[in-house]
Every structure is written in structure tokens, then in C-alpha cells.
Length: 185
Image 1 (cartoon, rainbow, N blue to C red):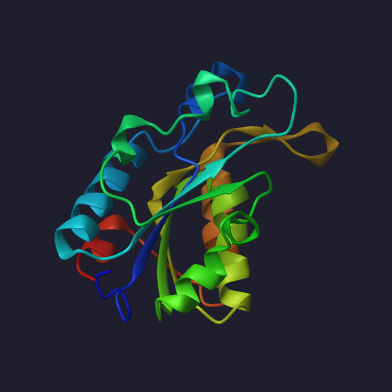
Image 2 (cartoon, one colour):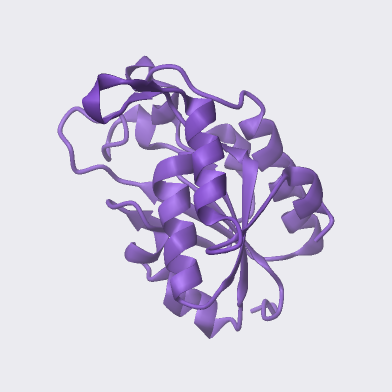
């Protein structure tokens, strides 16, 4: 086994084909996949740990349900991976195998988070990671969100959700950065 300790782990959350389904509605950040790809190239060149997280939905009819084509990872994340975590909830830390145990076992204390969606699984993973004591870097432009209807019926755009996630996380739970900054790690 190669030595992974002290290297930052890249945690790629739910970059799955099912998020291309029109059921989700309009999305933000068309450059997300390009940025995820750049991060993966950087981590793999440096031989740093890469963790892929897959959401196995338990909801009937979900494009992310196991056995559906949408459950598969997008091609952009293909290649060498150190760990695949499967979950059916929002946080990558509540999946199998246990991400926290794996990171601890490899002496990893710093993680970079990217993936889908900004305001759900990525944000939740960042919050849990911070609560567990990790140094968290949230690569905002390597995530995307979907337009949604908020309480009371008002539309909240995907871009607004991304900005709100950045405000929620920065300085409290994570350092919110862009891909260019992460590539300099």
C-alpha cells in the first residue's frame, strides 16, 4: 500500500449520470465537470488519495437508484480511485465503507470537496467533515446546484444557492476556494 498520510484527499461527491436527467431542472455552473476533471488530474499526478462517493437512492423512480443508468458515475471521474463510498443520505461520512475511518486510518486530515450538488450532499459533507475536525477546502466552482422552489413558493436560482452555500461554509466549516486555488495545493 502506498503512503497516503499527510496528503490531502479529494472527495468527489455524487458525480453521477442521473444528475443529467431533466427532472432536476436548470442547473448552474456548466464548467463543473471540466473543473472536477482538472482536480482529478492534479490529484492523480501527485499520487494523492481520491475518494469517489456514489448516491444510491432508496426512492422509487429516482434516476440515482441502483440498477438505473443514472446511478453510474459520469465518465469524467473515470480512472484510479482509492476508495468508493456508497451512501443513501446526504453526507459522504454516512456511507459505506465509513469515510471517517478510512481517512483516519491513512492519517489524512485535509480534504478537498467537489461534486454534485453544491447545497445538498457537498455542503452536508463539508459540515460533517468540519465537525469531525478535518481541514476542509470546498471547491465551489467544481460543484453545481439546481434551481428550486423555496418555502412560500419563491424561486431560488442555482446560482443563488451556490452563493448561499459559500456564505454558509466559508470561515466556519471550510475554506471556500476555486479550482485554480485547489490546483496549487
